[in-house]
Length: 68
Image (cartoon, rainbow, N blue to C red):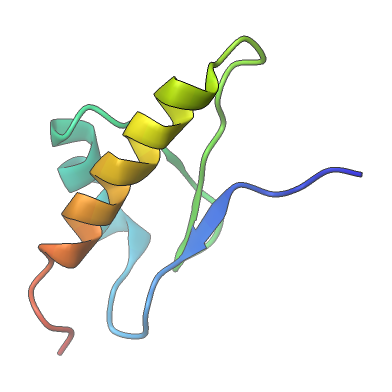
């Protein structure tokens, strides 16, 4: 079974506004629609590296201003 590594943004946020902030934090994600971020890690990624990336994503998302 395959599990998706995605984040669905809350209404009012769009991927094109969030991706640059994530890149500034050192995390490169891809868009999978207007409100969906997709993790596409290499096959050799470690659990620690994934945890570090998820933490950075959480930090960026929690720092976003309130949606309009």
